[in-house]
Amino acid sequence: INGWIEVICGSMFSGKTEELIRRLKRAKLAKQHVEIFKPGIDKRYHEENIVSHNNNAIRSTPVDFAGDILLLALDSDVVGIDEAQFFDDGIVDVVEKLARSGKRVILAGLDMDFKGRPFGPMPQLMAMAEFVTKVHAVCMQCGGVANFSYRSVASDEKVLLGETDSYEARCRTCFNDGMKSK
Ligand code: ADP
Ligand code: MG
Image 1 (spheres, rainbow, N blue to C red):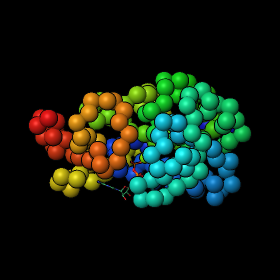
Image 2: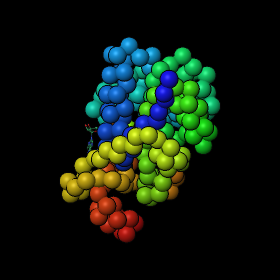
Image 3: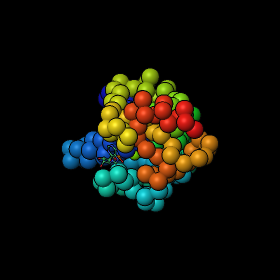
Image 4: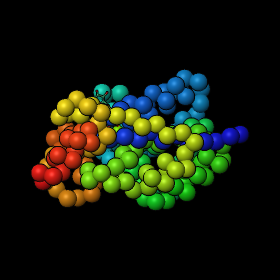
């Protein structure tokens, strides 16, 4: 058996969750045993489900520590993880172990925070992965290719759970313009 790691990354509203759900649903259709996890802190839309901004949903298990995933994923062929950037660094070792034990691991997460800095364990996960897919949103200012999540409210917290009320997908130019005028 041969396991591997796939990472889906990009800004907010770029379609990461949509793409994750698409891949997981296809695996289910192929009779693969699929287990899906998200960090316990992310309960914006639903206690358990993973929900995309276009309202696609799939059942998941919220976990507080990355280490919890190992046991819960024991019987699975495919492991899906959303909002991977919110997990502790233990996620790196967990994902490595899952792949080494023959599982297909699919992670979705923000590659950059609202300041454009690498987000949590994502750089390491992207480096380890066999496959990295970067998806993009549409810049809310100019319609360009949005690579950044611009925070439109005044807060300096690294983690500020929010939506269109507090974040906006922006291209490089519009992101930098916004940061300059802060
Ligand atoms: P992510 O998980 O990356 O935040 P989702 O998969 O949850 O993204 O949502 C993607 C959906 O978000 C798109 O299909 C679209 O319906 C919606 N959306 C809202 N704002 C934008 C935007 N600025 N650019 C692209 N899609 C957007
Ligand atoms: Mg998402």
